[in-house]
Length: 279
Picture 1 (cartoon, rainbow, N blue to C red):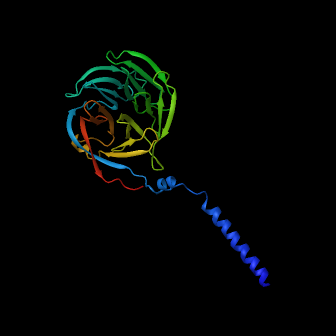
Picture 2: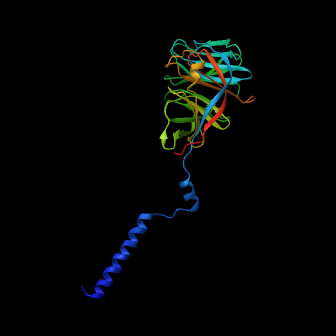
Picture 3: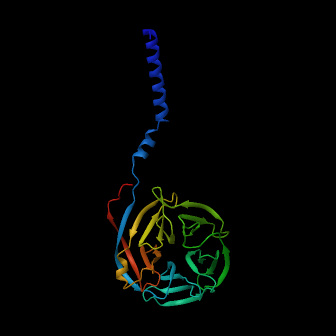
């Protein structure tokens, strides 16, 4: 090969290599995109202090829990045993109770605009009650299963056992939007009883002793509340009697939790356990 051809050949190779390098690097990221990519996903972890404990009906298969003006409102499950209850916090005494027809397995409960909204598990039927009298005002339908229910001041917030949460219009019950609950890129499924607290959704995870704290805009898990050691404080609680029941006193900034057939209900203060781990 002549020196001229060698020069042309080398220049061609250099040009091809430069083209390949440009294609491999892709579009140039802005400084903001580079900063976001460099920040690791972090989740805060919490434990708790027990401030008070109160009696709780061990026959109550708790599915939904609400605090309002010094009283608890509770939805209990199981076919033939489902109910809506008004409960005195200090004593655990049931002050008022209506039975849910035996074909329904009652689930989550929310109090919104002086109405109590109660889900059922697989019958795709919900009930709306007047707060004081427990008079049935109407029923409503939804697709899929009903697990947990809460509200954010605008919409009802419904979980169905998957990692999806739906936001419903409280009058038409039409889905306004949905979020998929993730920890990083990992779906968090079996979302159960819900409570909306200070701009976050708190969710029991079925057969778990942890509560997820969820960003209602993105679905990302902001933190975990570890309640594994709470069982021992309630006595000999069988494994099947899972943690399920979250209520919040907004005026007093008090968090209450209990579980299915638990003999106690606990008032908790959250404590950060350790620095958030990188993800």
